Length: 152
Image (cartoon, rainbow, N blue to C red; front, side, top):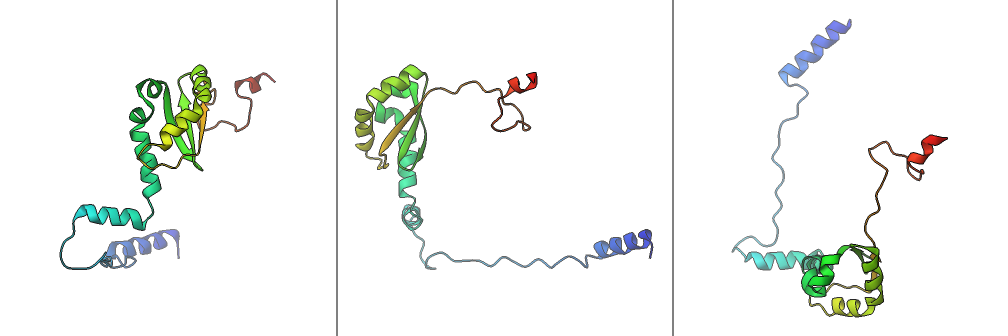
């Protein structure tokens, strides 16, 4: 059997659809009881409780209402970045703002904990603005010194 014969056999198989499986409808899964329709608000709140999304929604609500929680002046210079292990990381517009907010961190933490959103924050971490990076492109070397490596 030559390569040409093999190619013709494959073409005939694909042309007739012999290798194709018949489409079967996906099995449907009913959620809850079948019958009367329910209010969507009740369904969403049940889903939030079943999947234990309460803390994630509270943290997201803190990010959305950040300016109302900490005040307009602080919100202008400080942005919440992430919450990891009950530690809120806040990026500031300058290192001076990071230092000043570090000094009033206890008061700021008490204000955040008093917020009715329900986010469980136990610690604050302030970081300054992003430093410029020399790493550009997908072919950068991790843990390398950057552009200075080319000078031998």
